[in-house]
Length: 79
Image 1 (cartoon, rainbow, N blue to C red):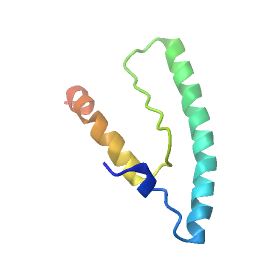
Image 2 (cartoon, one colour):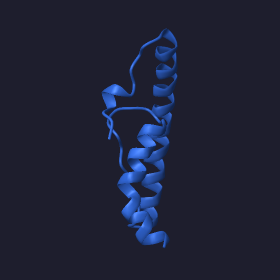
Image 3 (cartoon, helix red, strand yellow):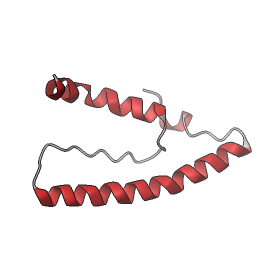
């Protein structure tokens, strides 16, 4: 796995712009995810897993990390 520090690097001014926009969207996504979790918890299912990453923004390297972490669960439940 790559380290977070190497992923969200600002090398050019456009990177700062992109990262700023991404952080704003991450804030909204986190609030949405927490609301979804609260609603799901109120309905009773117990097989959902929520992993709130402390740093970083949505992009392919982070998604790849999440997929690798849930591969065993996926293969066990999707056949």
